[in-house]
Length: 47
Ligand SMILES: [Zn+2]
Image (cartoon, rainbow, N blue to C red; front, side):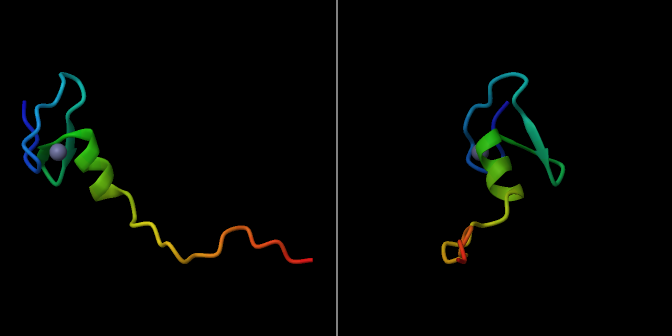
């Protein structure tokens, strides 16, 4: 089974289905994870 996005070979059992297409875990995570904003202030400690 090959990824329909990057065409990489997917180990058995690690196929992910995204929009009815078989994708590898990397592509799946890339598609489902929201893009990380670099400029979001994190845990600003006031005081
Ligand atoms: Zn892929």
